[in-house]
Length: 155
Image 1 (tube, rainbow, N blue to C red):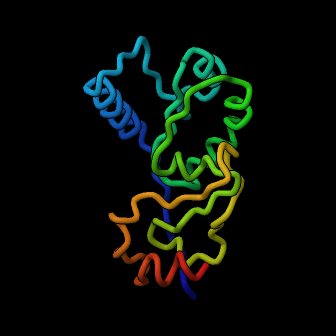
Image 2: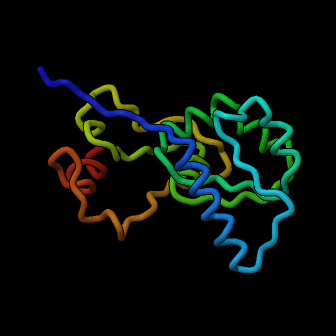
Image 3: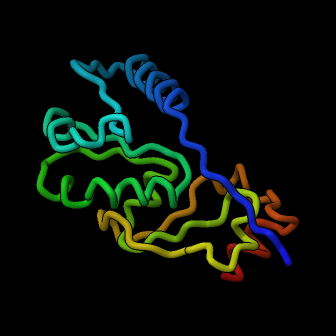
């Protein structure tokens, strides 16, 4: 019997570090911020207030299914629908913007797990599904299989 094991790690330290790096990149490119806030599980109850206070929402990277679950839990689709914000997204954030999200397996064990859900409802900002980082991962292997040829293209 195969045992499927993969874990999702949520690190607030990593999230804060990444947010600081993003802030620095934008600042170095000439963008100035009055406020720069991170919305995650630490302050999810304040989501409406946080979103209402900003002009730009950045949907960043991470594990696509984990991010999607968080977006569903905080009803981000409705929050964004009822606001007039500039949305910048990349990586997992861009994938979760589509109406239907394809979550390419990325963690060890996901491609072997018969219960791994590959398709789910997204934010509906776009109809397009994307797979970012193609040039970086096109020759990668996951669970002993070629990521694209034996996993993504066959599902």
